[in-house]
Image (tube, rainbow, N blue to C red):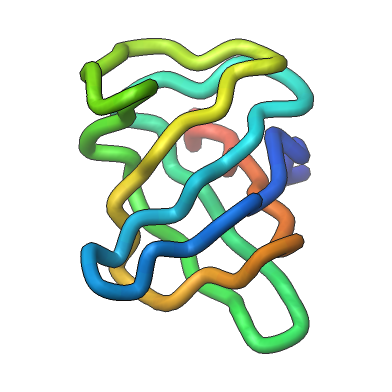
Length: 87
């Protein structure tokens, strides 16, 4: 299974555990699984909710800057991959 690069972490809000992610490639939907990887980061989680400017959205496209609540610490410049669904 090949993971598809979908974006990059631009900022991490420690107090609320939210990663600000810039979508660069592909499309991300609520329910998709993402894999965040960096020098000190490596975790996978399901996207339960995404927001743009505090408004919930279902789908993010390239160019969107979204916020996602994450279960672990993310860092600026971490790469976000979309994990393909298992057939």
